[in-house]
Structure formats: structure tokens, C-alpha cells
Image (cartoon, rainbow, N blue to C red; front, side, top):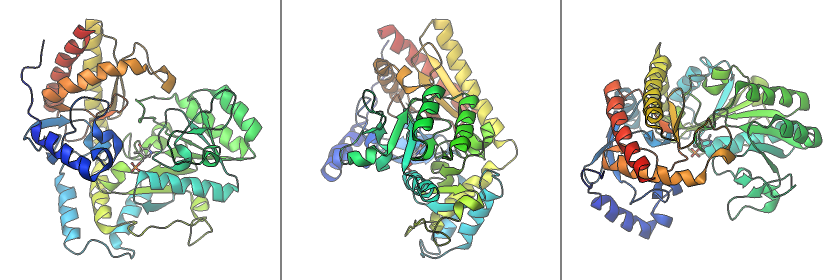
Length: 437
Ligand SMILES: *Cc1c(COP(=O)(O)O)cnc(C)c1O
């Protein structure tokens, strides 16, 4: 079986060739270059609801949703209206604004896991600031992170486990001094014994543990609640701060994010993506006691020219307000679960090696025969299946993030009919993927 037609992507291809003259690899963020899948990246011109349109006029049902921020789908009316109304009065003042207050109030009064919040301009910046805060409070410098969690491109977190018996990490990017990488200890997810041993031996040097409570950047490696609970208890025991990196899970698995989903109180939470409603916003928050260490109240310096930019605050406010509507998350989860269950049932019935891992409105297609919880359980060879699937889906008008390690996001704008249409096409493409193997 072959795709019924070959989609014309010539304009995107030409723009990509041009882009290579201006940007390294033709892009401003590496995964966008489509290196893990086939063909040139799509140049998108517009989005409406769950669909995006490219320069060649093709439309796609979008499950990337700008990598997560667009929980309401593209071009949401209320977001667009508040943003345009705000922009009409000027774009940036470098002063506090009432809109900033309103977003701060909306978040802190509906999230019992943080008392205070500080807005920054990206998820990376939020994580970087949270690490500094943890180090400032504890007076210690080392950080524990987990293999398979991504925390943005913070120097000391672009680190993998050291080889052999080395406790400290090795950087995964050129340009990061080994001395920075040595400040980070990388552990496998879900290994309580090794965690305890590491804390016992090094807790006097360890400022914090950072974890994606819903690891969703390297597939969707859902953890048992008991592992997260174990992190919480060990951190209390050893005087180490617990950071939940909720840049994806915040406002996604519920308004209170993973902290609320699991009922676990971290010391610091980082946000990004949804919090800016499609504009560049990140944030970090915690208790009064934790947050009083930040300047100008306290000695931990952190600042930003465009922090809490009013246009970005408007997009965030108009987005988050809609998430508080009764039943919002239940409805979104039910839709996503229906999609995941349909695909799983189809794969099971056909005998395909596929696990559809899902939580709330996040799903991940794993070419595996059992639930995956650690990054070393992901078979790199299975990414060939993804590459084929991605290509066939594009041909039929379904857009998944261009890497098999990326999760899919369902938005409130995806209707049951849209999801049924996408599921039918996914089933057709799975048949092709598995007939070739
Ligand atoms: C996306 C992401 C980041 C980085 O956010 P940017 O806005 O891309 O800098 C950090 N942590 C997690 C968990 C993320 O998903």
C-alpha cells in the first residue's frame, strides 16, 4: 500500500533551503529541522483550532501544538482578542503592569502548591533560576537529575550519566566545561536504591533534585506515584530541595499540574509552555519562605528586560482563565483517552508491537510491547518505525512532532470528529509501517 498521493511541499522545501543561508541548520531550534524524519520541515502560515496550514496550502491536524503551549488550539478567540487589545496600547514598558498582577493572582489563588511566582521568558530560564535559588537557599552546589528528563538547555543540565563508576555527569553538548557537568549527578528514573545510596554519600553537597514529574521529553515515561513520593521523603530527610520541572505538565495534567495530580508538594516548581498561551513566558514558584530569597527581597539575583511582558501576560491570562472552566480537564482527558484506547485496541487486534502511553491530554506512541518507565528501555531502532509513520501521516494531513521521542498533545480544539479522523488515518499508516517490517 502506498500513500494515495504525494503531497506537494515544494514551497516549504524552497524556504528551508533559503533559511539555511541565515540560520545554523536552517532553524532556530534543532528538532525543527526534521533530522529524525523525512523531508524538509513544514513552514506554517496559519493555525485555526486543531489544524495548521503550510506554505503549500496543505492542512494538517496538529498534535504538536507548538510543542505543548496551545492547550486551547490555534488562534483561540479569547486569547487573540486580549492580545490584540493589549498590543494596541504598546508592547513593553519595563514596569509592573496590572495584567501581570492579574495573571499572578489567577495562578497563585488557584494553585495551592505555590504562594509566590516570578515570571521569566522561557522554560530554560525558569529552570536555570530555580537551580540558582535552590543553591542560594541551601548553600550547596550539586544537583541530581534523571536520565530521560529534559530541562531546557541549562549548561549544568545538558549532562548524561558519567561512564563506569563516575558519580558525576558528562556534558552532552560541546561548550560546557566539565567542571559544570561535575556539579550534576545523573541517575536513572525509578531506581530508589541508587537514589538513596547517592543521597547518603553526597547529601552534604547536594542542593536539589530536579525531576520532570511527568517525564514527557523523551517519550512519555510515566512514573509511579510512589517514586515521586520517595523523592519527596528523601529530600526532607537529607535537607535537599525538590524541584518539579512542570514546563510541560504545568496546566496540562490539571491546573495544579503534576503537583496537584499526584498530591505532592515540591519546594520549587518551574513552568513554561502553556503559562504563556503561545507567547514566550516561563515562571518559577514556591512557598513564601522559599521565594523570599529572590532579589530584591533576598540575595539570589534574577532579572529580565522582558519579564512579565504585558502582551505575553495577556496571552497567558486569556488561556489560563479558560482552563478554570468546570470540567475542562475531564473533557480533554476523556477525548485523549478515547483516542489512545482506540489506537491501542487496533494495534492489539492486528498484533502490532505498539504501546500508546497516555496521561491527561498527552500521548506517546511507543513501538514497544510493555510499558516504558526509563529511557534505557526505549529501543532506538524502533525510531525507524516512527520515521515511516511520521512520513505517511504527513502525506495524509496529520502532523506529529518530528521525532519519535516527542509526545503528542491534544487540545480543547480537537473535537471527537477530528480525533476520529486522525485515528482512522493513524490506523491506515500503522498498517503500512507494520507491513513493511
Ligand atoms: C520545554 C521544556 C523546557 C525548556 O523550555 P524552553 O521554553 O524551551 O526553554 C524545560 N523543561 C521542560 C520539562 C520542558 O518540557
